[in-house]
View 1 (cartoon, rainbow, N blue to C red):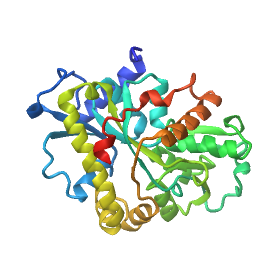
View 2 (view 1 turned 180 degrees about the vertical axis):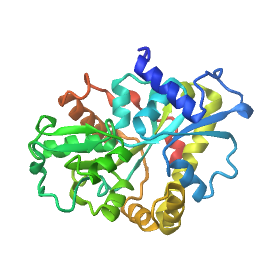
View 3 (view 1 turned 120 degrees about the horizontal axis):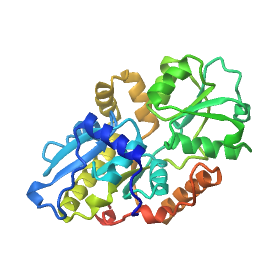
Length: 324
């Protein structure tokens, strides 16, 4: 937990601070309740859009400062450094953060369907089975939930990463590479899956069913968790976030319209993604921890991570009673 940040990490954080306006300057421990500013890391069309659509931000009792990230890994690097207090990510970024001894902890969880966690190929691709990926190029965001799905999918079909070439690209770059034929397949999640199916006529080679665990996490920085003043704000934020998830599950068309307006997606694409997913709160328990540990071990076995990760050490259940 005492490992100093790398130069690469410091450079990335500096870029994040410049781009989003969040500060890595430390607040004193135990911030007075009236002075709490909860810094939330988000992705476009994520928590802020969901909470707004559900009407759960208007009377939030603390000031919120939002920072937008392209994916989970840089969000967690910011949380580890204290640039943000909390943010939502998929099932794999916390494992990579744990491997880097990041100062973070998963404090709440949800679970969704995994049908949209897909490996896509072009409509006219000759690839029909997972084993056809041997010798092919797969675009995927490194450290993302799709990265984990690729490893699990390959393993389930007798392959390893040595049998394919992984092209580590963020979704926006991967979409271009996919549509231009620069990669043979693309591992991604909704709404990108729905968008590629609707606009690029992408075909699903395989999806996450039977492989991916579908978990997502709200992850807090240790610095925020050690601040008693911020704990009340964290608890209130988590309660409202999971109320918003339940609202979205029963107001899918309304949420799809709000999501489309926020992201610029076509309404039909947003509705497909909403109807196919529906993340709902779950308890952080032994079953969840064991599933995440199994995923971490796959990354270790593939030599993607430098050593074994003990996922349980990066979990904090202090809010479980309130979230129940």
